[in-house]
Image (cartoon, rainbow, N blue to C red; front, side, top):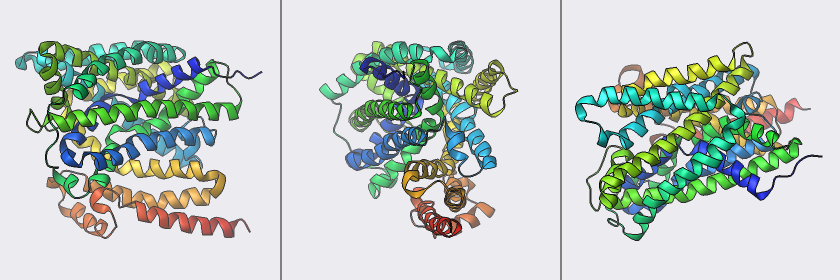
Length: 442
């Protein structure tokens, strides 16, 4: 007989998923949104929550409803070659190329730089990243233990540490917000929405599906319908926790301008606020918060990378795959946080629309169907505008030559200035796909 999850088991699955989601970007990006949005905080926060919380929940639900083990199964509805290409690209983005190095660099720069002399910063980052990835690799060697490691140990410790800081933010606010900056002045909702891309959580939702499914099976849940239902329940619990923390972190960022000047990213804001409330002890508290946040997510990403690539390429051994997922980001982490963010943002802006359309098509498949014609047409109409959105997210200095010419074409697309130039073409692709699906079925 198939096992039914107890409330306690469901909580630990949800806590595990929350722990996997809530990493480096989840700490610093809502804080930065709060600073930049200022008095426009609430519409900006709503936009951020839609993409930073709503899309991950839909991603988890899409995995559950389509009974897919992960992103490959969902992307295979477009075509098998596309599934290989998209899955590899997605895992490189949330794994060795961007997310994993960011975890080490953020946790060092935010948590440990106050304790390391400036002259030794480069050596300090190298030593820390070696230790960080060594621990993450060690704990990722046994995927079956991930619910205990992340859900029962690291996540509760992280929540307790972060809770101390956030209670202080609510009880004794440093300020009440100032004028919005940049695009938040005119379009706070849309700007907050695209800012949520940087958390990578919609991509992570597709990637972590396999971990949740494996954890459920370990607990004795084997029926496809039960796995789908429990995956969605665990997802709802985890993103609910994320939404509360995002709102409080954004409030922290907004109020920080009452005492400190604007910062280039959320890391210095967190450091300043922690020190303002607790002095040197605040720096130590923040170090614990960011290291725990980043370590638990690193374990999940390395595990997911190894599991998925082992499935895609069975001849590659799991120990080798997690070694690659550990050594490559160790190298990338030492290029610096600002450089990592500058490179990763355009790539995320380009790949996110493909993930969003895939998630929505998966969710709507009981109504729209699952024909390759439909999935393929929507994907094809989304891909080029998404690439243009990604080029538009490059630093202004790169907007020259052929890139400038392409951006002139993109300017004709509604929402292009806000990274949403893909949305109308995706709807056109959906309409054409539905018409084609109708006539191909006859």
